[in-house]
Image (cartoon, rainbow, N blue to C red; front, side, top):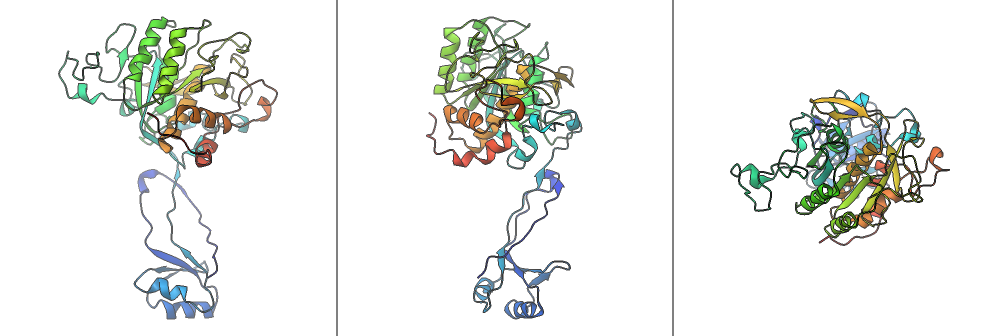
Length: 413
């Protein structure tokens, strides 16, 4: 039997019509009168001929497979298969997200083709250590992490005994209470980049259309204390399912407790993604933390502009593991709206979202392997070739489609 050639034209449609499964059957090439006659003899009253193609679809019934296999002159036979629709979100403001559909290929993180591979990280929890999240934002509320014990419990009671009372969606480590509402807008924008709900007919779409966002409010102004940051890490380490922590902050001083918190996160199977900082300097020479820490579960992210050039304010150096768009990034904001922000703070959550999709695709992957995959699958573009960086531009499609060639990983404990 010769292998036949079948070309499928895939239309760009919404996910509303997804889920149909292929029937058992075969495509048989019958482009001559003799071939069509032979096919009729082999499969009487069991055909679907196409008007403009030299193929006939044969539904499988008892004996069909054997009769085709025994065809005397070797008919071209191709089994039916599943075709996945190209994933395009129906969120009306998607056109404003130029970081997803850039005008310049040097800034293209190739998210649109990646969405044809996977859009959901529904079982992955991404902790966002930031200024909180507007919990009733229509594009974020569906993707908030929920503490089921508190949701089903009693007010003013620590229902799950974790030491935090009424922590329904997360915790405020500044005021030490359950108020995770955002007054600055920074955390809400970061959260939207990671996981604004996709395909909901509203607003924008995050890197992950479906994910669990865990807000940890550690900033109530543009600065905070290290104790608030460490408390946020401590909370995240106690939540089942956390695989990624987004840390869109930087400081000039080394902190051993922060170093130890990130190490502890790695021991629990958590990748920490941090912003490289907005000082426009080489952090190999003048460090910014935590980006400058050399830990195998830490990814430091710099920012490029819309043309793929390094954004002028982005820190750089070999300790910057890779870069992502960080200029005028359109996302969710407080008040239920949407606007743009610039900085490495908004490049980091793109990598966090990509990491969540990667871990959804490979739940057994340990953080060091995930970090290496993010770097290995980044793309060196012309504007980045002369820059001193650890890696190139985030390439989400390459990351997700090459994941099975990265070797084997042990299950995380």
